[in-house]
Length: 310
Image 1 (cartoon, helix red, strand yellow):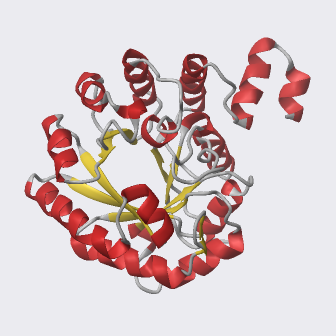
Image 2: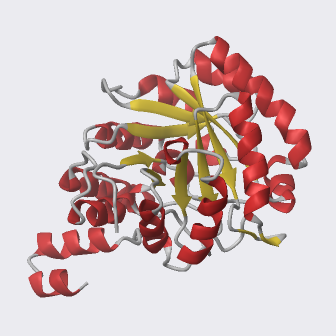
């Protein structure tokens, strides 16, 4: 089994992790969390979203957050942008990079964006064109690449069609999202076999949610197929407001642990990462589901037997 020697982890917790939380997190706590994440060795943090606050109230403070964080050299601070108005707001905050998003399935795209797939392309094209004029890089998200909560299984050829259009617009990378977290390695293999016939692996990233506990297994299959960029969320936070039952993202600390134990370089300090997860856990007021956090908690309390058996 040939594996890469280095992997890039893109932290999406401050955006994708928090967007589904019903309890509003204080703006100052979001800023502090991002500042802590900046000190972990992460090279990429998705800070917030410029979607209309009516749709994602949790991220209504995106402008204040982006303007107030302490940016660390070498770290890319990105934001999700739905349309040209969102782009204008993001550029006003000196965002380093933006992401545009759409779904591979019609049902989820209509629920999430209120447009068909074909109606979405020109909206995103306008955003990409204007961002590139401002010398801001654009990343593309494709949701529901394995299955859709409305349409069922999604064919790899449909994912290829959407990804191809995004690359034609000028995005530098497409992140493939198993939005409802039901995918298994054989499905990931089929998806990547189709896409890798058309795009080199360095243009693709994987974004796994962990509803069925298969996210790390899917990461391993992706690694075997040459993928070296993965999205994750500290503490396993996350979910999709338009995909009922979808749980959080693969936890950044679990992903980092697995990769490091496999001697794959990530550049991330695990202790600093877990400390940042504990910080947000306290602010949210609930237990974040992450085995590495549970192990760390037991180690700090001196409960070494539980730490070894978790």
